[in-house]
Image 1 (cartoon, rainbow, N blue to C red):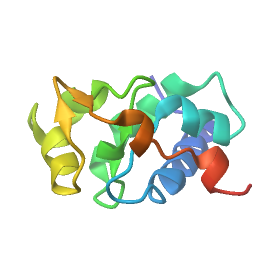
Image 2 (image 1 turned 60 degrees about the vertical axis):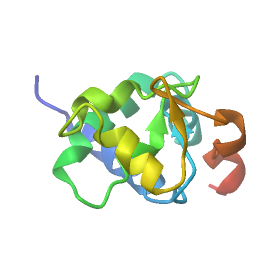
Image 3 (image 1 turned 120 degrees about the horizontal axis):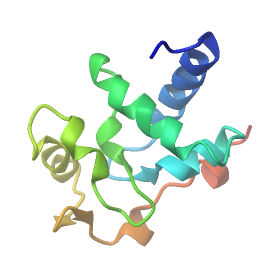
Image 4 (image 1 turned 180 degrees about the vertical axis):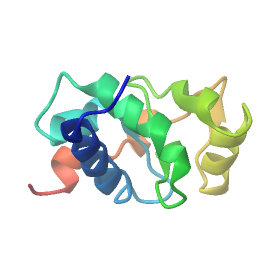
Length: 114
């Protein structure tokens, strides 16, 4: 499947948002999609995160699913790499889920102005 120019542009917008997530905080695929004006595109944000591993400057480990699960961990170099990167930033993970997810959640819709 070829990515259209529109998809590639969307990915670049996703990466720009992800780069703004502060260390020690996490956000969700859906929150990013909503911020970008495409609230039904959380899956596309996930695809962008999967593709982001070719870029060293995108902290994809800070993006989790809507309940704080590390669903993207399978796309990292090792099955534990996502958790390791979060722990280095002080984020506690229990059973593949961010502990205190509600407290650590960073909402671009509130933190950033369009």
